[in-house]
Length: 371
Image 1 (cartoon, rainbow, N blue to C red):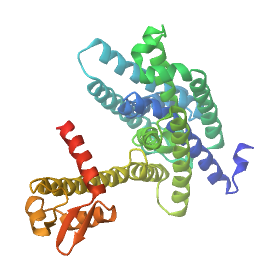
Image 2: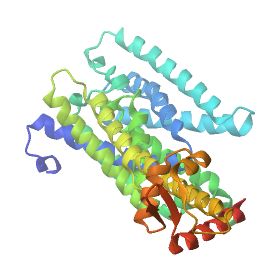
Image 3: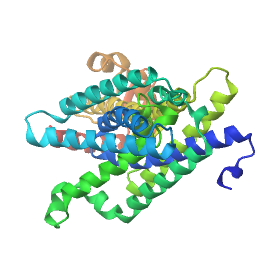
Image 4: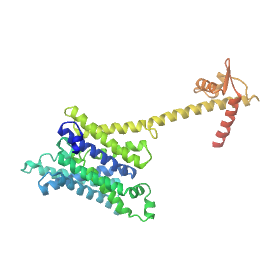
């Protein structure tokens, strides 16, 4: 069996499988939301799905995972289409449309949940977990339902990979090729709705958008290749789900959904800092290196210009005279220039070497061209 792959107790097997699956599907599809600058769309979809869950229960009077998931899918899809409709037919921007749909649908969902809680039926118990998620309520049937919908979403993603890739990077080019752009956009958003809907019971409507966007943002820092980004985002989402479940099981009272999102947040923070392509640490080190190069070049040019005033390019100068022209970090720069054999020291005097003179004149030409 699928769940027999894990050597934990039965309940933990189910929660681990469900969380890993949700993380992979949400992370993979979230890449397209990030690349299309529709990150807030995930938040709107997750909140819009809540009334769908409540209505599905009111209609069927059962907490069947399939019926609740279908309710969430339909409500999330309707909410998304309304956002697109408002943006296309009115002067409102997308952020305003997202805010309207998010708040109205979420408020309607809370209203329906309040009504459900007053119903004289025991079957209503547990529906409120869709707000903040409760992975411990997952059943084996839930996991297989998630697996089925997740597999369909990923299969559609692979089948329409080329089309989704083009509309994500160059919408105008896609139109020029004759692609049905509007239909493809709706289809892509529908897959994102599926990814969000299958995770509501585990993470909840409040935090689900983080699981969609976080892995994609993390993966974007490490690669410029879309295929690698999607696989990496799915892996980060899956690992976050697994580690979140294990942390929740190890720490009494720690809810699984927030634990998953917090761990995913660590992935985001680490990616933002340590990424070799766009990381803050790399940028800081590069800025420090550039500052060092500029400081050395400035001292080298100062030596050249002072020497030229004496009609002798190798004329020695005191440290005090160099400080008078360029007071910041002169001693350290001179030591570094000496290691490069660009300058030499004679007591308290410093002068250019032949190698340093060539380098200084090259710098003078480059800086003069820039100026």
